[in-house]
Structures are given as structure tokens and as C-alpha cells.
Image 1: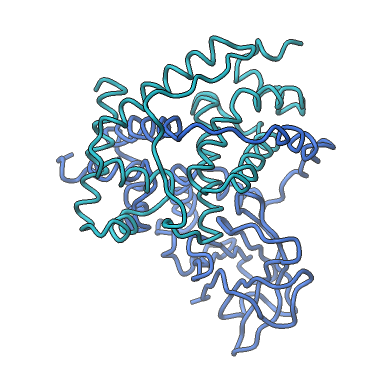
Image 2: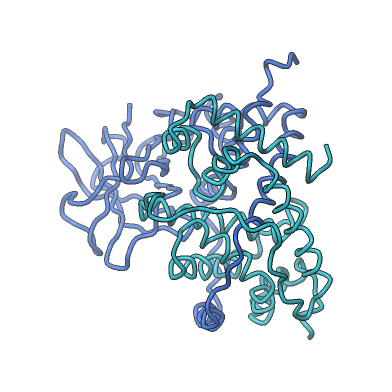
Length: 236
Length: 187
């Protein structure tokens, strides 16, 4: 492969995570099939990882250890085995930003015949289900989401990533939009990593709705959107 | 069981089996590493302590996802810490002029040996090597690198912050990383 088709110049920045979104996707896609650049990235990532050792020395207060022990007890409840939606969502979340983009590209490419998902997909139809990408809004520019619905529109789930954790008196609310009318589809929170998955409920077929949005609302939800919008997506 | 004599990987295995003493030992070994990184990112000790708690809590919850063939435990820890600290920084929309980001002095405080002197000695040595390598970089490269690594800035954000052309910033970061790689890895 000619050198100018490689992404060697971008790899140091990719290892630091400081490329823009389009460059990140392009490099991730290239790394998925270029051994030379993959090896280069491995070496750069090792350098990036070492930078943690160059932060000025500091120590937390002695109380923190006990706080940690208090937080972890009782023993955490192990999650139930995932259903098919969570199994699909597992491909979405089982990654660091670096590896996950490539994995998502592979998974979505297998499902829909190959297309870019990270902030660029509108929708894809397969014989079994349909996906609608949601893009981070101004309040959460790094967030992303994916609505996965059955082909007949009867049921679906929302998978989100990189949403900030909310205070205890707040909740994320999914809105299903048709002809300007908004109805609530789900209330959810996210993990500390910003990941969440929730089943969508609606009084009509999900495939009827033309737009989807997620906002921050008071705990318990709101009759209509009142808070900052964090995710948005269109069905077509 | 003497947890202090166990390897980091063994501790992770025990943590995945919900052994709190294993988490305590891991915390004793690396709380300063995580806290230092968090503090240099978020800028205030209280938030850095929150991040540190979050990181070790996540280790407790997700120890079963650790894969030794992909990274050392310290690498895994520092990646989680960096990502979490940057997430908190972005969520709180802290402007960089409100606090500064810095590189450590070349000669680090020696971490207490504790019960695992070999591991700590190895870590102390690596810290010294990395800090010496960073100190050899030109100031403008160190600045760009610090904003990229500790603050999670994109290259465009760095260019805006330093009032430099985008191409210049990308070149500086690339040169810095290549220089560090040559110094630390010998290639």
C-alpha cells in the first residue's frame, strides 16, 4: 500500500484521542484492515498510556479508602443475562473509544451492508430490525445513541453512550415525535461511563414516528420536554 | 491470604470475585497514580477524589471485563481514570484558564514501598523515565501534549486555546509523541 494511503501522521493524535470526529472514524476504519498502521498505533498508544505517569504527584485524603469500602458494600448485584437487545447493545458498549468505533463499524456493516454509523447514519433497514442514529446535541456533544426497532415497528430499544451522569433529582426522557406532537417513550439513567439501554414504550407503532429526541427532565419525567436536549435523530 | 504479595492481575481476578480486601490492596498501590492524574485534569482536590472513587468503584464493578493480554492493570486503571476525569471536566464545562495543567517535576517523589517493593520500584523507575522524556520536549510541544492528554482537547481546541494554526498544533503533537516513543521505546 502506498505510504500516502496510510494514516501514519494521524496515529499519534488518534492515540491521544484529539482528532475530530471524521478523522477518528477514518483512522479507526483504516486500522481495522491495515497491519502496518495498527502496529504503529499500538506503539503510540503505549506512549500515550505512559503519560499518566507524568502527572504531578498528589495523594487523596486518608478518608477516601473508607469511602470506597462503604460504597462497594453490599456486594453488587450481578446483572440478569441480556436479552437480544442488550446483546446487540453489548457490542456497542464493550469498548474503549479507540476499539469500539472499529467494532461498531464491523457490526453495523454486517447488519446493513456497510455504512458509517458514528454520527453519520440516518437509518438502515434489514430483514429483522431497523436502526436510527441519534447525534449529540449542544448539551452533550460527545453523546451518541441508537434506536433499534423491529422491522414491523412494534417494539424497540434505545442504546446511548457518553451521556453524562445526572443528579439524583434528574432523569433522561426519550421523546417520540409525530407531526410536532411529542409523547414520552422512556425514562432512563446511565452508568458512570455514560452508557444506558432502555426499552421503548409507545401507544402506536414506533415506525410511525418521524423524529426522536432525548432531554434532561426532573425525576419521574415530564408531560413534555422542559430541559436541555442531549440527543436527536430523524427517522428518514 | 497476603494480598500484598499478589500480582496486579491476581488482584483483579479476586476483585471480580467480590473480594473487598483485594480492592483495598489495589487501592493502596495505585490511589496516588489515579488521584494525581485526576487532579491534573479536573483541577480541584474534591472533584479529583470523586473521580478516584468512581474509578475504583468501576474496577470493583467491571473487574470481570479486564483482559490481561490487552493492557497491564496500571494501564487499564490510568485509561479509566483519564476518561472519567475528562468526562467530568467536560460535564462541568470548566474553562482551562480556571486552572492550569502541568507536567510533573523530573524527579518524582518516591512512592512508598508498602508491601510490594518490586512493583513499586518498577513503577518509580518508569515514572522517572517518562518524566525525564517529557522534560526534554520543547515547551510548545509540552503545552500541546498536556492539553491533548490531560484535558482531552481536540487538535482544533488546542489550536484555539494556544492561538496557533491547526497544522502547527498537529505537527507539534506528532513530533512530541514520536520523540517520546523514540526515548521510551528506543525505536
